[in-house]
Amino acid sequence: MVERVAYFALVDAGLGSREAARRVGINYRTAKRWRAEAEAAAQAGEPTVVPVVSARFLSLAERILIADRIRQPGVSLRVIAAELGRPVSTITRELHRNQQPDGGYHPHAAHEMAAIVGPGPKSRNWPRIQGCGRSFKMGSRGGSARSRSPADCAVIIPTGQDGM
Image 1 (cartoon, helix red, strand yellow):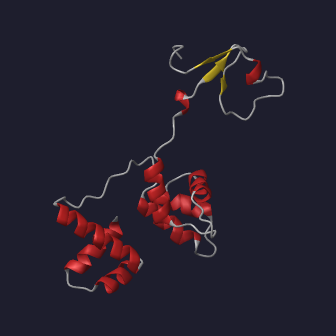
Image 2 (cartoon, rainbow, N blue to C red; image 1 turned 60 degrees about the vertical axis):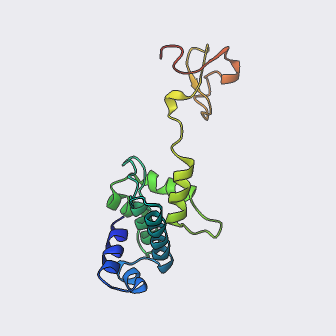
Image 3 (cartoon, rainbow, N blue to C red; image 1 turned 90 degrees about the vertical axis):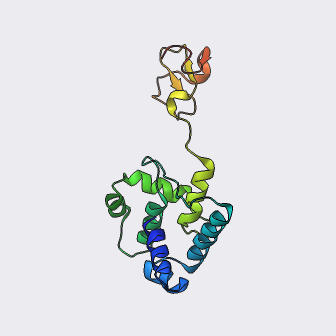
């Protein structure tokens, strides 16, 4: 987001598109796409607004930082997580979830995919299996060896209908 604002400020100041992209540190194709989006919004009469993403989710700027830092030698995931103020597991999950077939991580594609898929269900909305002396979450991987399996249980109750 900061890069986009800086890019358009340089272009408005009279700098060429390629030079502005180089100075901000973005790919020329990214700058070209930003210009096309801004021109399409201007022709449609819409104000150019960058959607605000909840702090709960990774922003495009955070994804770009992850992509830049993982390419630098000697930078660990812990360092990247500390810079972003996020848990290491978030960075690991992001990289595993959005790894491309070529083995790379492309932040713009990852951000677009996250916008399409949206947030997943919260665990409190998952159905629970009752009747075994304890509740099992559907999809859980186990429990102790002495616990009964969810298949032995009698009733599946969607969470929220039993008052829990």
